[in-house]
Image (cartoon, rainbow, N blue to C red; front, top):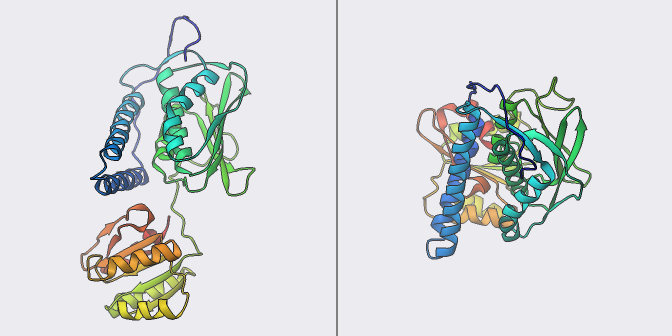
Length: 339
């Protein structure tokens, strides 16, 4: 990664006071829950358990190093680095993960591009960028481009839209970019259904056009969701229907599982979200959710409980339900359905 033996330049970076975004913590929780489910499912496969454990260990080490860098525990040491060589090295380290996911990542050919940066922070940025790209489920292309005035750009093109703004690697990259004063943006890619990510390395005098404000990325409510409200408790069933109707979401409201099975057998309701007052461990409930997942790609599953102010985010993909208290649906139902 290094290109010369020139003495490092100490950058005046003091302790940074950064609030940890709530959405980042939510994304971390979802990521950990997803890996925990993988570990449980792979209990009889030592190789998969070892792989999942290695991924958890790597995340822990990466977050520790990132926190040390962000808090200013040591001054950032700038040295001339070849960004093209650094990108090639990062891709080589990530290739096994991409190959296992049956996705391709390639480096756009180009000459050496040298910029004075902290090598550790550059490695963090590349790892987080590639980790986010891998989450998109699509082949990508990484390129290094000069921007002028001593600034360079890392651009990851073709990222699948499955890598949303709440994905863990993107959240961590946003935090790093904000702390260092780097520019970071997402734009629609040239190929339909993809995104291009741009990371401008170096402190900017002003944010370039198109970069978001320093607000948290917000979860968005997909208006195409078709919701089944399945609840024997009439008041919460009616309240759920009212809130969904006001939000413009299509929904069907039923009182019990037998009614839902009958409608599913007789029609094609297209339920992609399930709001249920029936416990996930009740007889037949898990099988019914699995049927919706297989038939319609169920992406949201919410369980209503009689606990004041309960708000548990679900595991991604609707494998386990979110849990909401019936008493506070006005404030929690739509945010829980958003993604």
